[in-house]
Image: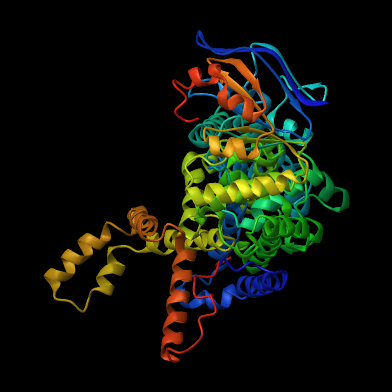
Length: 251
Length: 388
């Protein structure tokens, strides 16, 4: 069964066609990689899934419900979490507080007024937050400010913030961009472990090493259109993909 | 590691704060600030700044129009004295209600933008309110003269129980206790302590953490399933109600209300107080308010004669030069002193006076540790403690 289905989506910016009749079916439980050269429309497509952009035409359905015109926070409440290209975390808050925010969002909804209880005495939230920090290996840093973390740790934290909400769909926008090889491998390991939770994931990635170690299915996007789709091994040798990547130096 | 405040630490903080405020008439006296008029101002503007900090320090929205709520609170309180009763309780309740409603209206519109645009919108609203109070709304505000009490006011509640008509304008009171002098100060002080406690609870609550997160990263917030708009509006209304309460208390201790209370300089003043004391800290705004009101009263009362007295021990020519220079910074020119102080603080202590205390504390700690012998175990707490 597909968790996310994209039908004939078009999106233009000032006459430039960023997405051209895109169709995509993301199977539940799969790790679906979207690859393609710079400017292929990968990020634009992702932004259509989270409510940042609204397609000009076409439909985006998540679990049978249209996502068009729904605000980002409502889409998150429906079960879609997102990791950004540059980790977006709360730099002025401690790691524990960082994870508590999405935990509160999951438990109390988009708005609730809890102005009188102490957050540190909310054992339900604290337990959950500490547990997830343990999972990603950041528990000993729980009381330091998130802004002072290394990039790799920031990414871990951001993942923890997404995972604590038990999302149905996790969107990863270049999760290893700008990382050292060691950090990249750590992140791959972490993502593989998350895979055991059975969360459906969409990964946008440049690094083919990451794609082939994680993905169960690959869609290749070029000039706003899906030009090829299939298992990672098949995509490796596909001439259309080679051409899109100008000789396929990456492959 | 930042040390996390626990419930016990907060209880201690509250106890110390309460004690410090209640004994203020005693310890402020040696500084020449031990008279009720000034003490009342400390408490009132402290309350104003504590509320302002919930919006600015916690949520990260810099409002340049909070004086409007101060003015609304004052006008409402005076109307409550005129129409209902000289008792301060209804004045305080109605003052907070009207300022809260007014904040809901202005906040709803202004919070559509953030950053500088939000600041400009609030400034525009406050200046509009100020000009309206001066002109169109004269029937309500009594324009330039300001809203004052009169012998012939209705005072419905008071007159129901009064046996004879008043022969003079009665004083504001709390069930018979006149709200001038020290009783007035203690009434304001009690409300400051309650207001401070509420701000403390909000800071430590899930709401407070969410507000801090909004300040830290709105983008992440949007993709975390929380709707930021109602949260920022809540912070705006709460801080508007604090400002309204402060405005009420200004009218309680001196029952008149004028439009100049809503002017942008008054809005700017509370920004200065908060930054001077320490943005985002609990105690900072109260300290900042105290410092600014203290300087305003002390330095503005100095004149050339006082200065001649101070420098009398020097030879005449030097004395005259010094008086001529320092004279610029006192009396009407006390704003120069404030400006210089503000610049020094912002440049050297961006975290305000509180940061100064924190640095001093950790410096002394390190010094003590050093003197105690270099072999003491560093337990990882050598970094400055959060001063809240």
